[in-house]
Length: 413
Image 1 (tube, one colour):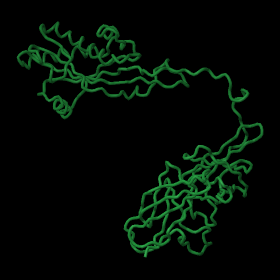
Image 2: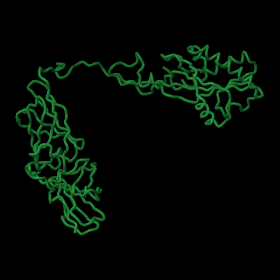
Image 3: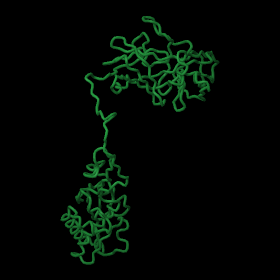
Image 4: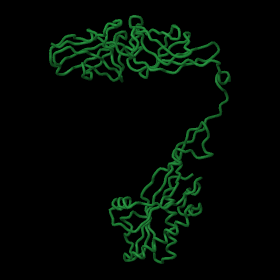
């Protein structure tokens, strides 16, 4: 494995190889400079070697080195690079024939050294360890199009000179992150019992939603609602676990069986004095956790559930113009949640969110809606992408049509 000197070591190795041109063209020099500096203080025949690009190697990218990392150990993939070089020839007194002769000699040497030998790399730069890497470095000619050549020399900001391109692959630079190897596992779980196997399939939830009397009416639930869980192998002896990324502690509730479904009741603030802080509006996940004697708990998949805020709006009436509104939100809004007022078809951000010291009280959120025209405007609250339900609870039974809740709208006149 090579260290950060690998790039310099490869450039030095290629320069040493090109120095063999001097044996055939006495007085020639080999430089490793940027093209705009290649002829500074150099007037005779010369070759210039310039690395113009370092790109990731696709084959070795994110690939651990063999025999250095075992299963279970954190990966330490090396930095794998392909290096692109440009070899440019210059003739004495701008003699193009001499430049072509030099370039031909250089291409012949690189052709004969398509695979660099470890001893060639070792002597090129003292202290480098590129020669120790597991992959040999190969030199391959690159066929640049006229467009690519034009872009390169335009970037160099010098006039084009006869040149050819090569790619050197691959250079592996070892990661400097510390190596870590976990200790062998001596126990397989509690009391060294290993994996627990049961004959039946585990529980699986396919759908969860509120029981509002109208199937498919709303997908979001509110505090005080009953939820129906549908799926396979649902066991009423288990508990329903509700998890939110906004809360540190999940909520667990008992369930009752209804044939192939389970029913679970979400307590309202009147039924649970801690409901305001145990719950939060937004996206939750629901899972069934079944515990059998002598066996570890088995959890089903997690199904998504939207918890909609319940709101009250004051004042219900206002004159046209800028309207100041105050909404209460149950359950309470957390500090890092995104809150929007949906006033008719408009969206308005809050001017302030207050959570009372009494944890049994809902959040109070203030809004200012600018330039409100006369009319009746339905009000909704959106918290983390979940909207409050603007229909009265319980909704009318079919075939009666749904209507907006008169307590969730503002009349401007």
